[in-house]
Image (cartoon, rainbow, N blue to C red; front, top):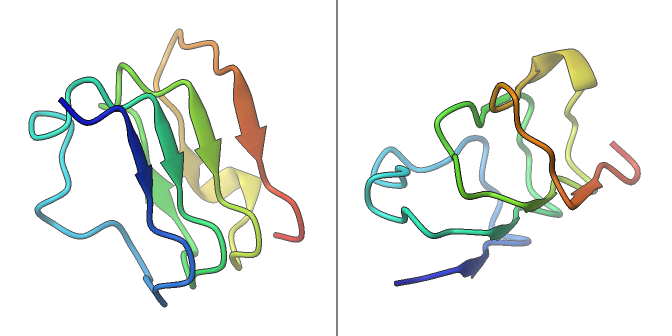
Length: 79
């Protein structure tokens, strides 16, 4: 099962509708840097440990985090 997914620089405005936690239940690293994401819902991504949203026009308040989750790495550089 996939544990790391790099989707940087694809001009994404949101996660694709097919991209769900049930399809990638062991996804631990998600790199969405250099896209056009303004908001994201991560609350169902229970295995996610590292997320990069660097270089996206996103604000902290528009990120819905997984409750009671401790992430190893969160990259919000230049957001």
